Image (tube, rainbow, N blue to C red; front, side):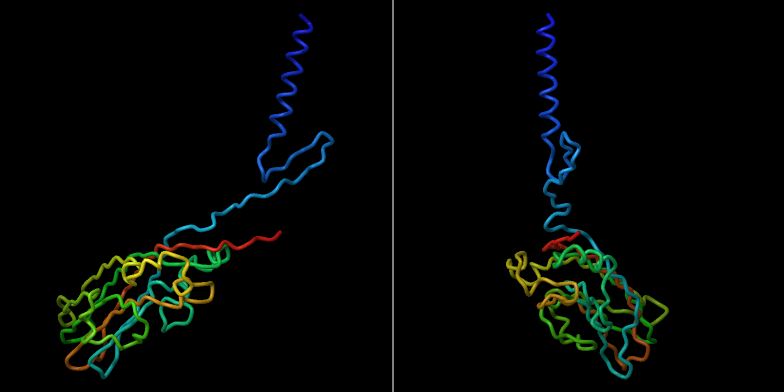
Length: 235
């Protein structure tokens, strides 16, 4: 009887030792002589991750003395969304770029509220332009026929003088290339750069006669962003 009890006790002790030694990588292992052995670390973050971010701005679109006015924003360039203001990075951008080396905007939603400040009717249009080069006040009425453009007419200030645009976008569809979903350099941005190929969202105004006070724009752009190329951490 005692022999059987001893055998069972030894088996239990051996099993306990085996369970104790089967420790997962990244954890500390304490040996029999109480020496702590550091096992290989594991990655604490995925190689890439997707999150949502938002850019918000309130400003006035105006080109006093001219019959057209427009502003341009980059919907896939998080480092500098508004080219009129240097490095207007969105909240959380710097923190994520401390962890990852590249970002790519997959898509998102633009919500624009426009209010007329003039005493006469104003035409307003907004749209996505996949080709770079449309600067401030360059998105004119002849460009409003773009497939991705929506147009409205605002009454004089004090009446039906406001409107809202809500536009969802997918960058791969707008660029018209499945290569956008791969790690193609000109579609990736860094901590201090926009992608080499930018996607623009423009909002333009037309007037007759010429502008005096323009229109007020309240803009929200929500981005679905993929962060990639995880940085190596050092102790």
